[in-house]
Amino acid sequence: MPELPEVQTITMDLDELTTGRTILEVAVIYDRIVASETSRFSQLLIGAAIKKVSRLGKWILFNLNGPAGPTFLLTHLKMTGQFVLGPWSMADSWPPHIQAAFLLDPPLAAGPALLYYDIRKFGRLRAFDSAELATFLTELKLGPDPLTVLPEEFHRRVTAKKGRLKGVLLDQTIVAGFGNIYVDESLFAARLSPLRSASSLTRAETGRLLIEARRIFVTAIRERGSTTSNYHGLKGGGTYQLQHQVYGRAGNSCPVCGAVITRFIVGGRSTHICLICQGGKQ
Ligand SMILES: [Zn+2]
Image 1 (cartoon, rainbow, N blue to C red):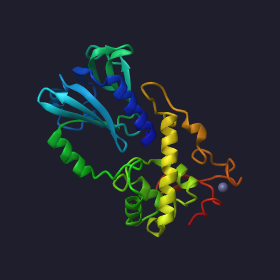
Image 2: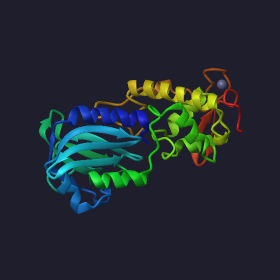
Image 3: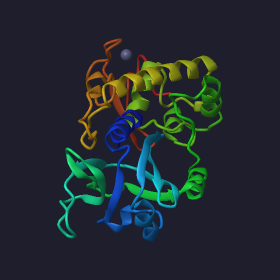
Image 4: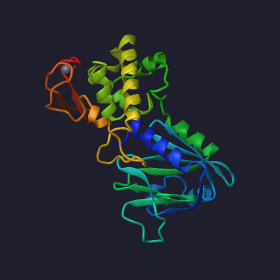
């Protein structure tokens, strides 16, 4: 699943390639991919000009100028969602796994259509006016972004929560953007066990965690994210997976102390740690 650096990369690609273009036509190939009111989806988007594409946690928000005023296309890619550019097709002749398509004007060199591709079909697209977007975001309760949250607020939010540190960081209402890869990498860099009770962290520990997480996020964005099986930026994949210290490295030696990296399950999620550097399973 794409996390903050991968979603940021996709967002920057979409912003660069689609801003200033108008959506001429909308095709919804798999109905359930649209989670807002279906009849309004095309109505809101056809004729809308893309003003900016931005990231909210792991969500992508298209800001549009619609025929009836400000309009928004909000999407979460979940497990296997991707945006790609390609040809516009006639009904029933779309390539496999294309779930929705947007015909853009002027057309791009790579094709006139922005295609939403999703093998497992867990991703969702929603179109809103300003009031509907505000209501949806209020209900979503996304926490602040780890790139901009103040250290005091980060400390307050993380330590106010009962539960293990890893689960708290994955909770998008606490802070929005972490997923499994970057939690494991950040906790290793900050020398913190994923099994620590979140409320037991000192101000120095949450400060160190935020500094390390930011350093990792910024580096990973520069590398266009980590390319795993289902991530694809519109302008290519990323290379940050080559810098992973613990994630996906179980059985290899810790780059700091040389001990063997351990993999186990925390809250249903595969977790990678150095028991020596991160203080064991406690
Ligand atoms: Zn170690």
